[in-house]
Length: 267
Image (tube, rainbow, N blue to C red; front, side, top):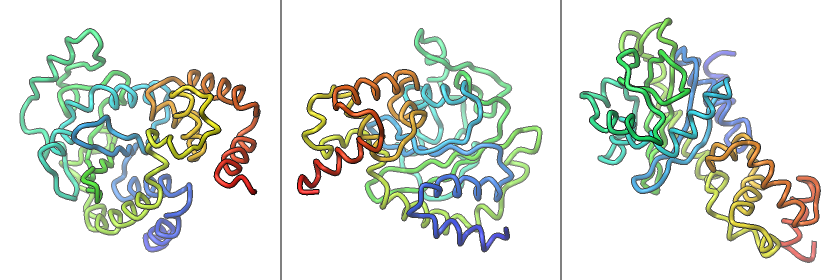
């Protein structure tokens, strides 16, 4: 598939569940990358998990640690707090001096970060893939939040500092427009706090069960829900099972029917 066809497919998939995978695939092709992650940052809240294509389970656990803790020392996050322009950022653009909070965080009893000169940032979150070169795409949203598209290349290939992805930079305006279009249509899928729209049928559930049910209705998998809420897949499945029992249903199809019936009792 040539580049024009890839871009056309991306544009056409904005309303499709495959958009994020298509987006990550195109970004990887443009940068010869190994992995891609997507988060939405704000100044006063935990980042919102959107997507990753890590392969190993331990790497998924590292994302939970990043969302709940180590994002606070991320150079990209710190740049967001101060104000960041749209575009591509090498780590050398974001990380010009050692962050003193790295040592403080690494000594915390609850922290899972190791200080090491072997990594590009001088530290690494526990279980994060090692020996990666990173470049970040910054996409500001209308509400003031910023999307971070993390693009990672195995260092055995080449560092982004030495082999800058020119084509990724050239196509950034199109990628930015596509992602913003996708986000405007799908934002509620990633906001697990918006559970008040579920209706009265969830009144028998606990707050956590409501969050899980809300995310199921928005199309998230158990793995995705675990990453968003910072809980294990086993815990997600336990909450789902308990919620289904309370709602007297046994399948996701029955859940959807119950939800639609609540929205329109005459259906």
